[in-house]
Amino acid sequence: MLALEQHGWKGALIGAGWGRPDTFTVASALAARTTRFEPLIAIRPGYWRPANFASAAATLDHLTDGRVRINIVSGQDNLGAYGDSEGDQAHRYARTKEFMRLVRRLWLEERVTHQGEHFQVSESTVQPRIHIRDGRPHPKLYFGGASEAAERVAATEADVQLFWGETLDGVGERIDRLKTLSQSLDRDLPPLEFGLRITTLVRDTTDQAWADAQAKVAEMAKAQGAGWQDHHGPVAVGQQRLLDLHARGEVLDDNLYTAPGKYGGGGASTTWLVGSAQEVARSLRKYQALGITHFILSDTPYLTEVIRQGDQLLPLLRG
Image (cartoon, rainbow, N blue to C red; front, side):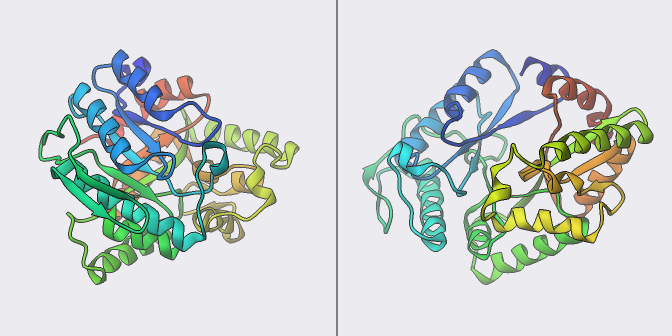
């Protein structure tokens, strides 16, 4: 995390899922060791109750002078391991929607009473209170998902909708649809913002970048996706959209590489932007022109790429 700060990054996404370290504990430890680092903390409704979560987030936000961001996750998890249960997709997203609305109320209001389908609180006041900082009334709520149910939640409750690395036309179409949906569902929050979560493979030259990208995929191909179990069962709508891109071509737009998804890349690793820092920056600027204002970029090994991309790519994206 010190390397992130030293090389120009604003923060990092801390992923959630049973069997991984607890995200709030990790975020608190990292925030204590840094001065500007902003953790984007992934959490699940059901793992957390709304009031417990609202209190934990408010406390960490207070201790870090407003550095907390939250990523609400509704995907599948090992629910039974921590005593949770969910119904079908409609039930899952209805619970997420209610969770987000109630958490926001707990941050902004006092003596909150709510008797909902999934959650209840009575005369609840979270301490410490969230302080408005630079016009931000509370930690931003990031959210992902491409199904119809997920998009209805994003359109009404999220602060930032996160996309994975789709093509420019795919992202543009989804932004237009979500804006229209926000209007038709009478969104009563500030306009929805949009973010991109994608792998960026940056090297000094174009040839070097593509040689390394193809070598990485060749290694993935040897294992035939053995390290990614989602290949062997149903996948989420957003993930399937990424996997389907390979049928359109191995390289789309200028430098969106779709081959990783064929051999085991999942989520943000399904498609990669490949090239020199200038080429990758140019591609990211095209997403920005569509309305993307938040970027979550990564490649492995993490420390090497934090330094390389922090020094070569980020300066081209500022300003």
